[in-house]
Length: 260
Image 1 (cartoon, helix red, strand yellow):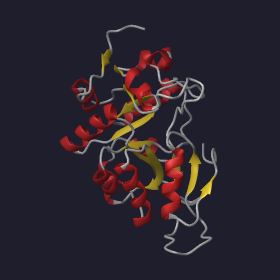
Image 2 (cartoon, rainbow, N blue to C red):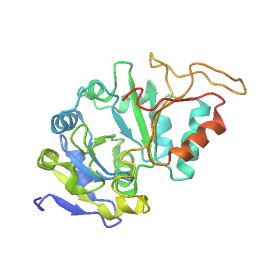
Image 3 (tube, one colour):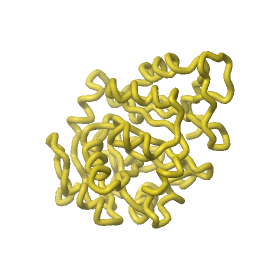
């Protein structure tokens, strides 16, 4: 691997990454709690992301939120759904859910065609928080400065994991990236008791929408409600998140792989 585009994460926000993403069309590879991701901030970057991964375009885009306030400004969700996000925020638990955009939140999507690549056919995206300090710092700075969004996808060739190692992102992504933030030690610190074989390479994903992309109904104290939230991808801290779901919803489904 060549080193000219690599920077080590030492705990502070990587200003070079923030400046690059704001400059347009750039691709930054960043460490998270579960491995490396590709981050971009506009349609040109999204196009390069799909190209680098040979990725299908039918999946909801991932929006990285650096705060609960940002999440609530962008995504449409009920109080019950907000309660799960709040619990994950308080406990520093990586969590992502499929949600529709608020009409008022759509104003922050770049007016360059990004919406076509950031949402699925139902108009939903996956809104993620507590994904890891290196990326959270970037998302927070971008949003604080001028409400710039940070979009993401795992930094590995489709169908292959990066094993939480920067060398695992593959030659194609390595060549496509404008900047790569090295943080193998940070990634390893999140699952210190896991091996390459047993570690989670992704975060939990829950769908809070029905098949048409509409929010599932609030449940209150009712039981046997359908449609209900669906855990569609297991991952890091799945045990905690299942408990949080159970604390808030009497009805929810476990269907790993249903959407992905």
